[in-house]
Length: 87
Image (cartoon, rainbow, N blue to C red):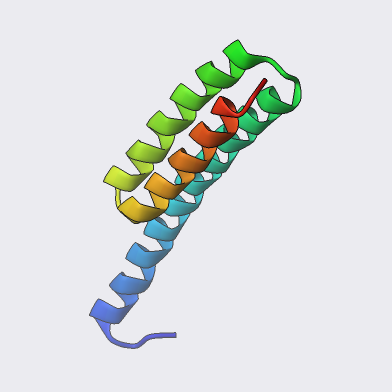
């Protein structure tokens, strides 16, 4: 355990930020799973709606600094490609 006051504060701040980032990443993963679930069910309308929602969630995570912009772009691109390839 840290002895210096500023180091103790950093530990607390990092713990808080880690929890926040975990929650945001979990939300992104859930949104992505919903898109793939709609694709598996062959429900194009639900897939498109889930894609819009997932894109929004991913963009919010990027704006908060949880994901790098290229990572977010890659995730959105893969989801869009998967939805567009539906029959």
